[in-house]
Image 1: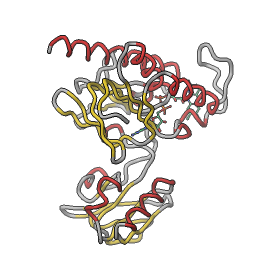
Image 2: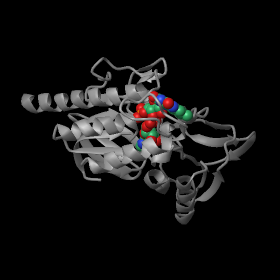
Image 3: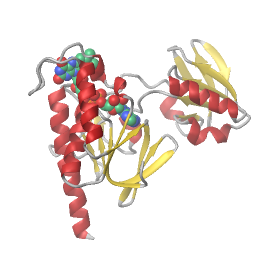
Image 4: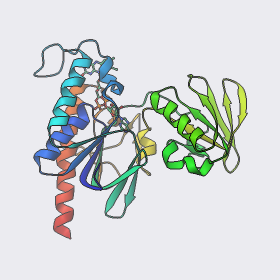
Length: 274
Ligand SMILES: Cc1cc2nc3c(=O)[nH]c(=O)nc-3n(C[C@H](O)[C@H](O)[C@H](O)COP(=O)(O)OP(=O)(O)OC[C@H]3O[C@@H](n4cnc5c(N)ncnc54)[C@H](O)[C@@H]3O)c2cc1C
């Protein structure tokens, strides 16, 4: 990942790939931050018959085609989970794991998060709850922390926290979790059992789009946009399933294209104003 891009796209599904192709065609330096291809909802589709220009194709095959097209288009494909998008005056800072880059515009194409937030997760985020062990682990050196998550990344983060001297309680199973505390989170209830902890690391594949960008307007299960795919945050655009129903590939690709053109126009206008 470079330090600086014109546009950062979060999500490498149909919406993100479509957006990347148009950003590159318009001459913008572009990064696409995306999870492994298997995390796309499309990957599980048995047979897709309604995407124009393609005969019946499996979700897995279409994901492979999209990823190959993305990797060949000239955008930087950054493998990892975007953790936050912070407005910094005229630009944005995007955190991916422990790395960071800045950009002039952001396109959210993160699909939908089917995982629900745990009770207390939102309330204590940044106050004892973290999504990134590499970023925040040092704050808990020598303390007791819980890691919730069953994937490879969660196992890696649990090992990392142990290596820096934390006592780690790892919860890989999908139990009912609740987070409690006062000023800071200090207790995890996992499957009905109470655990006193100093910090809780939640490692999921995705970060709810409502948590990615502060102040983003969200209604009826989707990010609110206008017809140009502009959100209420200037410089932030959205496309695909994350803007709401219908959850369909053709809609995602179309919105990705519109979001990209709008983001390019936004950047060109800003440059003329300077
Ligand atoms: C079983 C199934 C069958 C389907 N069949 C059809 C069909 O036949 N026809 C049809 O039109 N549609 C179908 N769909 C719907 C279709 O898959 C979606 O509409 C489409 O994939 C949406 O594209 P998208 O780019 O918006 O999101 P996605 O394809 O979900 O891509 C978003 C990507 O962003 C990644 N991501 C999310 N958050 C982050 C983050 N913080 N950092 C980095 N990466 C992140 C995700 O992991 C994912 O890889 C089906 C869906 C399912 C589940």
